[in-house]
Length: 476
Image (tube, rainbow, N blue to C red; front, side, top):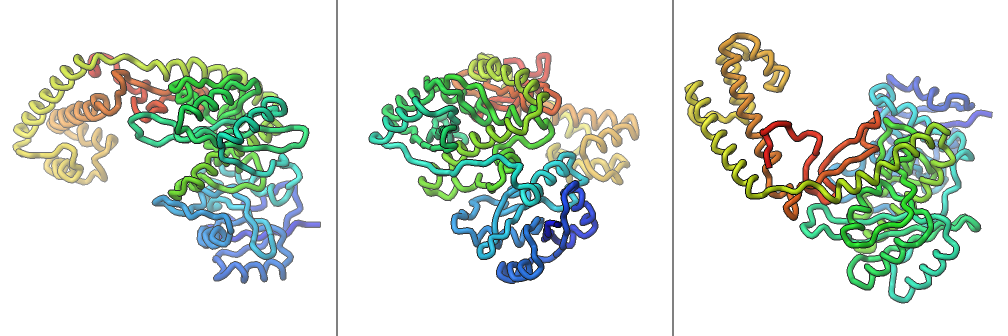
């Protein structure tokens, strides 16, 4: 007997609807299609009941918004982009009255434009066609720590917990690099239940309890634990037995897929939805619950991924995960900066740029010419006889230079000056340094190939260490 699924999309999906059959390959599925959002949810529920629809695959953003606002626990996002299909892809929802399950996917065009989209969408649709294949996730519950309940939680977890996940919340651009709160989730295999506890990081009393929980002997699982552990080390509360990491396990399974916790969670678990904006409402209670939700998602996702892992993924994990420890040491140490030397070099380079810019303006007989204005550079292209080029980007700049030796002379100088100015604005900014050091991050899960990726540090300062030019261009 076929499962009847409704695809609720948009007119942009029309040319790609034949691809729906590949998302349920091997399953007996009868597809129905609707390319416009219903005026009301009630209207859709009535039509689905009449047609015997058992599940909905939704790529219609308008309807997604209606459905979310009908959920009793939905917190409207406090961001510029609002509700998007991309955020909610893989999310599992239900119609409010008939409880028909709804799975969100991106527009069908993504199936041919994004390399991993077909595999991800197939997994998401299987939430409707083969729900029994998904890990039985635990019920989400959480508690805010108090002086009275902390000893009780600690004693119970020390004795009965088999695995503990940890997550911290911090503020971007905090000059003191503080932790706002620490969340924990303990797993009890005998009852297949979890408990989440959030400890505000606001007193020496709570700091000592964080140290105690971090020292518990159970294995710890984190999501991109490099970030959390840099902060824990800063405050002298290292995590014992950090052996598990959802980001690294997922990367060991599918190197091309997004490795954010929200995506990993909707991929690994069935009945969950995007929650990453819930902590931005301005409510401290929402913020703490969001922290707890991260911990719950990390623990459940990790257990689910273990069941999905093939032997190759475990081998990859055992090779990749040990790299986090030298990367952690590198991020904590950074590079010592000779600040006096840096100030001298910066002043020299700034003076050199001023002189070069003045000479360039004299060469082209255009006082006040702004090298950073693409409109003015485009006018220069016209003067040089290459005004028909589409842009002033790197490719078209090379074409303009190659058009004539005079062009090459003028534009090579322009490119060199812009390069020096970029050097100053990137590598000689005091705000990128902290305590006289340059910090950076190395991430073993940051590339598809296994090469270490680099970025600014977890302390929201520093530089991508792999991009610093060689030679004496940057000398501090």
